[in-house]
Image (cartoon, rainbow, N blue to C red):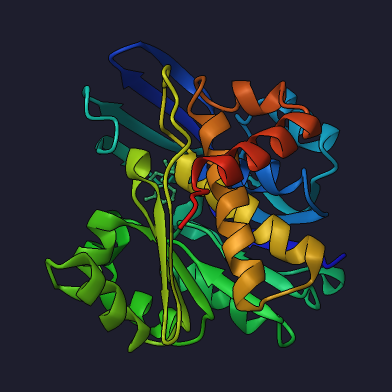
Length: 302
Ligand code: AMP
């Protein structure tokens, strides 16, 4: 079993959907990612929180065995994100982003973390993603996520880190925006030219597709009738994806296909409740049952 390291945001999220709202709830890309991946392998978080960050949230991550030795607590306020969704839950509207302690964050990796073989650069400032990558000793697989906020604000830094990663996991709008190409397939192919060998495009309720030089793969999303809050779906997808690869210590095309299904399974749970509430009561056997349901969902005879 390979270990997994993630750098990303640990946040307090205020989110409104047509079905309810939460204020200053536990969120952040590294939080969702590490919680989801902890069902598969040992996960180490590199991030920063402020002195205002509630201890109960740290406790929740510790109950899943998440390694917080790379989490700094700094003077100041924790990162905050405010967002809302309309009936089209595929599109988040960011109302406010307060970087707070992330504004001055300099990640310094404890020695024990530098040799972690599987690395996820979750959605955060691409300069920080690169700073973490530079401190790692030749990881076996590095994957990256980002969002419009950084594609618009830090394109050059993003392209620099993209040149050094094996896989990119982004949503469809970000794929088009990053490649500056409206056709999704062409856009994903163009991104292969920026560095990564694999591009996984997350399409919310329409599933996920994967493109590499020699493979194309698509899975639908699990057909859910009640979706409350899509926040964190992308990060939990990545947690299932990377968690499975790290656990099986495999990076071949078949393993990547299975990892995409595990990613889709984890995302399908997250959206069933606000914040990490559904993940906090998730049982490993539920993951396996839904994974098998996916096989049935896409099986057909010729
Ligand atoms: P997603 O999986 O794409 O829904 O990611 C949602 C999470 O991303 C939320 O919990 C936010 O705290 C976090 N987030 C939102 N904007 C940013 C940003 N600019 N940088 C880092 N994390 C962010």
